[in-house]
Length: 331
Image (tube, rainbow, N blue to C red):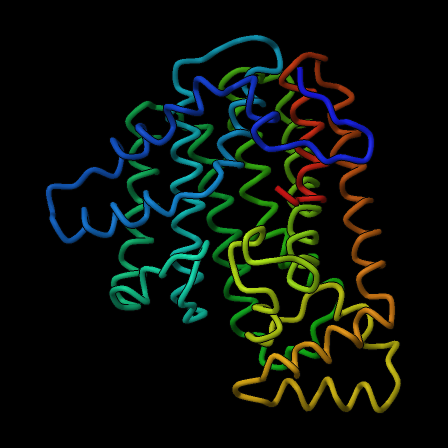
């Protein structure tokens, strides 16, 4: 059973302990699913598998599938498919944002081209969908397809938001619900479909609220964290002129002079580190970080509350610890 020492956030390795044997096989399952006899695709695959992340979403799926102590043979494939879809969104996001680094490594669009990145994202997603069709799990396929649709709409909303400083708090919540929470909710719901169908709604709610808290915490790390934690340079969102909750909150509360500084910053093509530091100072001094932290905590509480209807045990305890990990990622 996992547990959190008071004041110390849980390590991801402890959260993953109840499903470690299965999680160790997710990488092999991913490799099996994406295997191609086309050398150009295999070359990109090797790079993507090397830069694979912490498998947080597959962890959620596997834990959700086992809250009743059952083990379904398809869960490993479901976990691999969820990670493939997540990876596909990252590849597409990097191409859209023209990002050069992801998790400290060159992105697909940086090493190859933006066209290759878009095609590879499509390949990863289509391979995942094909696997769900192969095993005949149409319920899981429907859940995943709906999440993928939400993520696409969310990306389009962000891309077509021409005046970033007109982005409201409601716009922000709608965006992160689509881009982040939808896939975490889908991962938990797909796990429930495989092993705990009577807890499907509760686990889907848990995943949604966890995803909201996770993304707000991630956006906070852009102001306070390090590249080792976030996988991207600190200040990346500001450099890309993306408006997240800490800045959204302070926009209506800053002085006229600070408002002018912020608006001037968003007109600069290549802001300096000093420019970014100044915006961070304005956000901090006007309470943006404290407000965003409080909102993340509310979503975290809602995620924990959703687990009240789920049987106690090592998987559900790990899911509770995953909430703490999501809002306080240090390791």
